[in-house]
Amino acid sequence: MLRGARPRRGAALLLAAAAAASSSGALDYDRRGGGGCGDGSSFGIHVSASSPLRRMLSYAAEGILPGAGHLLSPGLSPAEGFPIQNSFASASVPPTNFSNQSSDGNSDDSKCCAGCIGRNTIAKAAAAVGPAVVNICSTQDTHGWVLEKSIGSGTIIDPDGTILTCAHVVVDFQSTKPILRGKVSVTLQDGREFEGTVLSADRHSDIAVVKIKPNTPLPSASLGLSSKLRPGDWVVALGCPLSLQNTVTAGIVSCVDRKSSDLGLGGVRREYLQTDCAINQGNSGGPLVNLDGEIVGVNVMKVLAADGLSFAVPIDSVVKIVENFKKNGRVVRPWLGLKMLDLNPMIIAQLKERSSSFPDVKKGVLVPMVTPGSPAERAGFRPGDVVVEFDGKMVESIKEIIDIMGDKIGVQFKVLVKRANNVTVSLTVIPEEADSSR
Image 1 (cartoon, rainbow, N blue to C red):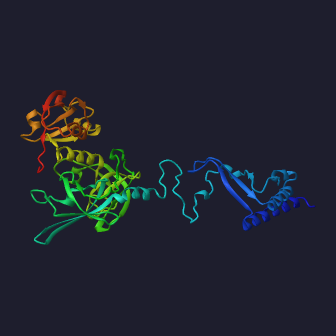
Image 2: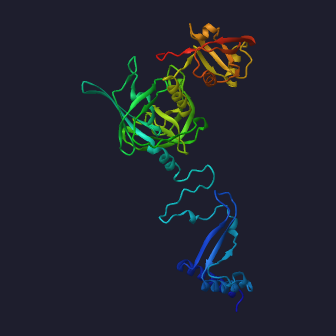
Image 3: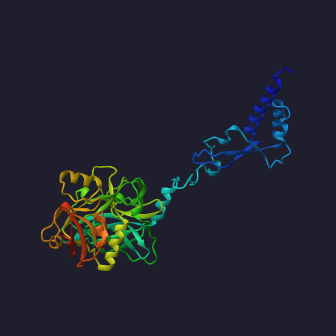
């Protein structure tokens, strides 16, 4: 036989065997070993072949490399198969994972690593909260004439029928005195309708609690922690935009502490979650949900004529508001009469450039203005003071001062401030309750 003819004959046999295997289904394989997520870990391929195919492969291997027939010994039973280690065993990209393919061709929700989003992640989050989302419709009528109709959303937070929603959906704050809209109708996802009663509403936070009386316990949603959110986290918004019930949109968190002053809103200082979820009229009061199916905010508003700018009240703030409702029947907010500004190293450096007498501080809260006749003025605060301690605790943000005061009215607080030329002064301030109309 000519030199090289035997290897060529063996190669031809291998090709014929492979073609026959692929067309007849005589060859089967499955992936074994590590790998995944493109991490470059090695894997192996376990191949099973019928007895005739194994004999053909054995002859072919013998034709290419004399004495190699034992590598493909047909001594294995048809159910066992034989391992093939090839140069692709350490390839960085694994072959298609057929085990994740269902009979109908749709892949399952397996995740390649912790923190990854599966194909059903958002759907599961929406399904966890969806049954607790309701449509709220309220009307105000006089002598049978409907003067105004408000449509919004809400979330059942207790199986007894306690619903969280927006105040502007159920209360008219346009007049000098808040007026409860006439009839509040609540429609559940399953189509049942109830008449609702507004228990409490707060105009500054735009949060209200509505109660219905079901005959059986209702599906309710779990509350999460908005403090754990980060810019870029995925969130899901549910509600009834334009009366289209059971609507779900998704997006990311754009900002976790958008100030009310940034939005041109006066009055009591508030912070919002900013997202790019699609929000429209009717979404007000609906839940903002994390990927664990927990409520992390209450959708309250969007910027008109702007896409991707929607805002929600953080659930951590909502929980405190609901606690105030239960404890006081309203939200009690202490008022000092101070305009305050959070300091950071860049602002401090700029202020020191403008005035060499600015106190040597690394953090704190600047007081640029004091309201005449306020508790702060009576306590001795001056414009330019830097609050470094409040009630014995070091502070570096307005939020920390608000959290320390809580709902305490008429209680003395010791405050340590730094003034020009590093003068340290101790003050005692007694907060009053904020005027709801202010």
